[in-house]
Length: 231
Picture 1 (spheres, one colour):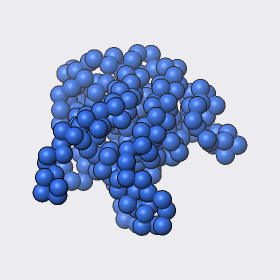
Picture 2: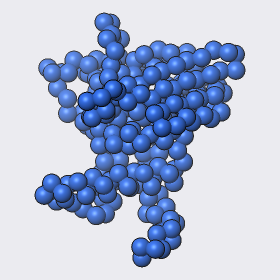
Picture 3: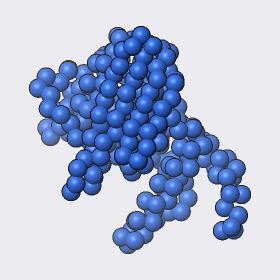
Picture 4: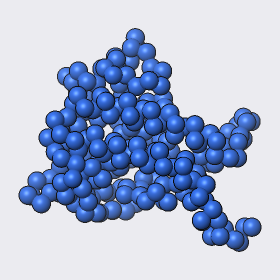
């Protein structure tokens, strides 16, 4: 199976403080590899402000899988304001990214990894993106990657003899559910953090989730000339 995929996030603040997070993912399934935690906080319980679309049952899942994996990050940022400036360095197997930004924008891509790889049945549909993680992506880059992922999923469905749809209707449905989870999960986070960095990092993700289906057609029309060799 090989060693886990590792994505390292380092937050370096102007006062000299540093916060580091090493995300480990199963190389075959992209599942989040969680360290042992003996005392999960109460806000991680599945029934604590459970997301409306969540199909998980308390009998088999006492805790929200996303919340469990997010708990350590939340604790590190629970006393931070979203607009504080920070330098964020992201190290993947292939390359290193670095950006001077705000805490909320620097935290958003890390939140995105946790949300999609933790076993949430709704968010898992976005999981393939994590293998080709692009922190600090623009809306145009996100739309290009999301549409590519969606159409590749259709290709694999067709290969498996299942119906495939070559439009963006299915992608819009996925993002509609993702948006509900983002907003419901934000309510859970408000019970876990004293200040707004964690919640606003998720709000930033939700803005992208809202904008992708709205701006997809216009963005694709704008980049269509790039494909002139195929048309």
